[in-house]
Image 1 (cartoon, rainbow, N blue to C red):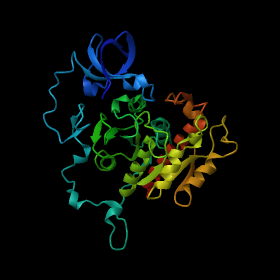
Image 2 (cartoon, helix red, strand yellow):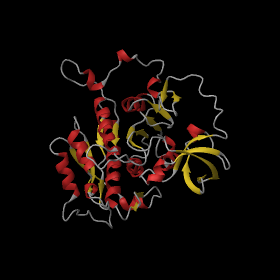
Image 3 (cartoon, helix red, strand yellow):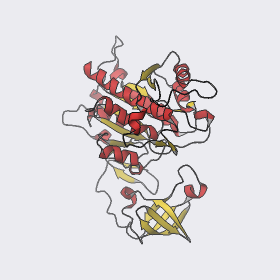
Length: 373
């Protein structure tokens, strides 16, 4: 059962709710529950905060009893998200958008899915896709992509694997405000972006054919689901996203999860999340990696001498291309963009940021190559 409790909003910004004798931090997705103001009576889900989970920094407002029960709802919609839950709501899926001259589904050129008799793949869209496994990679990767190509239209597709609400990410809000990202689509069970997509593969195709993005970053929202197992974690969303990109014929890059400061051995150097995805991929991808970690932070040796770049090369094997790229860690540290990951600053875990920066640099380079071609 949901762990729901009645409370009263004691402070609107930042949101705090009094539940019984305790005043607790809370978050409300106003796109779902409407505005929440001081004095409102609300129902909050207290489970995560009570358990102290990774997503347990606050209670979640389930419904506003004071002003959240009079929404007229949508007049018409093509589909629902969070369907068959108490939070189901209507959306207008971007997959259904099309111009007057867009072909019907049966007449589409589906890239290498429609290989002709000679085995040629047909015309592939000139767009690269960078697949993330953690939301913390988004800001440095986006910054590096725009640094490498200032006019590049880079958009973000949010998938499952972390937080599902599109409104919860401060990083996305900052990147949109600064116009480093040109758009934000929430795909699959994720919801609340500027546009909605029912599937990741549908979001990818619409990003190119409908929204006109020139490069795509796709990955989970903040936080990550985990069970301390090989396959039971949100990082596996990268496998789904990479396969969707490959099947559409897009150039697919995988941002490696790397760390010089994570206290957990399974994530130090090259994370087991990245190694597992590289092993399981059914197609070949490019894996951008940093040549070094900033002027003041030499490329570290991990685990008593293991060099992460060589470990990543081993994980790529003979199938995936290791692509060494620029990683301007010191320059990014001065950008004012988010420079903390899991309570570790950029100086405490420079390799994490270097890997994400190299991935963004690779995305820009791939987009420029596609333009030239």
